Image 1 (cartoon, helix red, strand yellow):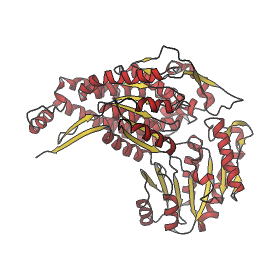
Image 2 (image 1 turned 90 degrees about the vertical axis):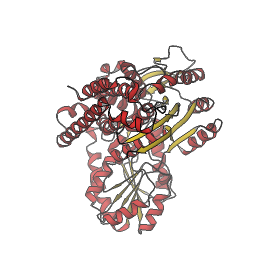
Image 3 (image 1 turned 60 degrees about the vertical axis):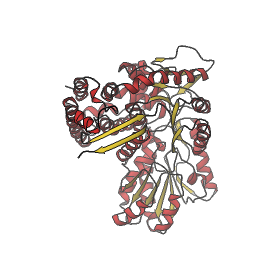
Image 4 (image 1 turned 180 degrees about the vertical axis):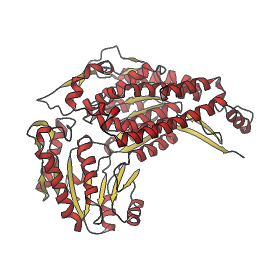
Amino acid sequence: MNRFARLRRSIVSSQGDQSNDVKIESNSVEDIRNNEINNEGRHNLDQELDDCEKEISTLDGVEDKSDDSGENEKFHLTLDQVKRRNSSFTWLIQSSSFVNGIYSQSKPPDSFSVYSSGSSTIHSEVVQVVDNCSLSGIHDAVDAARDSGSRWKSTSKTERRRVLLDWIHEIIKHELDLCCISALESGISVYEAHKEFQSVLDALLKSLRAESSDSIQLSQPLGIVGILIPWNISISNVLIEVFISLMHGNTVILHPSYLTPLFILALARLAQEAHVPNGVFNVIASTNRNSVVSALSQRPEVRMISFYGSLMDARTLVRHSAIHLQRVSTQIHGLVPCIVFEDADLTHVVDHIMQTRLFKNAGQSWSSMNRIFVEECAHDRLLSHLLVRIERLLSADSRGGFCGKLIDQNAIENARRLVADAVSEGAVCMLGGDVKESSVEEFQPTLITGVDDEMAIAREHTLAPIVAISVFNREDEVVARSSSFTDGSAAFVFTLDLEKAHRVASKMSYNAVGINTTNVLESIVQVQSAFCAAKYQSFKLVSSAK
């Protein structure tokens, strides 16, 4: 039996009556504890989840050893192959906002086009035309979330877990289609999207686990939660924000970027398939983020707005939210530094730079390293390694698709601007620096050295396959320079001296710091999961067993 089907069966069988929920009106905390411990169905659920986690761990081990064979082979698709198989996921691509369990039928005064990643104004390729949600449509979403909120809040925790697990089952069943849609609109490779799905799966299952029987947890949902996300946010962040918020009894209004709304609207279609109650999960498709923020902040029923994006947009959100003292959670686009000391294994370092700065969605990932600091005595050696590897990419241009396409023409022009500015300020462009001759939609892998802290390429989030190298001489110097950035989601330190690595990492304010690795997605997922579990509840009491 499929592991998700087995889990679903276990949850349904353990559902019983409402006694699975912790009830504040119970006679005593001890009574609550006894009820929880004596609930056999709940313990069965815990056991099933334990078995599932072991099974996933085993499968992950197999995948690591045979990465390009078997089940994973179907995820190794180029963008052209994705386009050729689009008939298989056309039913998931929607053209309007998702409000109160249905896609909007009323036609707004305008619409917007979603383009295939990398499409320019000359070589445009429209994937879907999406209705631009009107102001009344945004308020309809708030009304729907409010009306369904009391029912969802009073639903037992076990039943909420059952509904969400059904939704996860639909997501897993259609994972390849979702990966293809994400690749089509954002430019991420299908296989990278698949790896993000795999990373978040364990975290979601653990979050759906029944409360441990040796503690009592009483929590109160906030109510309606608005979630605003950018186009290049990771799949794991989106799923964690949505599922943990819903698991704790909140209802959600999600506003994706107008550049990449199709993946989120497809998730909503799968929510329909899983029979998620109407109004519990809503999606607003709009090109005007300010109007969405303004509308949500005007409604006191919206108790929290979670935001990912720029510092300027975050300031606007905070000003609007002050009207009704709404909670605000922000994660700002931060610059992700990478520090390479002279004793680092440079071959290993180059492998990770190539993977995160060039191959992973063409350097457009939320957590892609943005600035590389190299100790001066190791600079020339690292540069020679990078030159060999990047020249190999450029010489094999006929194969195409090495780094992927940038999101749109504006991204291409911005990459050109950053390179030109750096060169004019004294930096040296060793390789690349413009679009590929064989494709005006792909930016060449680019290597720039001699970057200083005042250049735009050092201060802005570089969403392109550009490796920008800066030199440092002292440990305290590089810690200060890297810490001057707006906090990002991750940082990386490469050195064989672990004492030095931990010393540097302890001084850096990031969600995760990778030491001799950039594979910190799992750690970021764990941090994000714990953070969301705390922020989406308004009250929590923990009583230890005696």
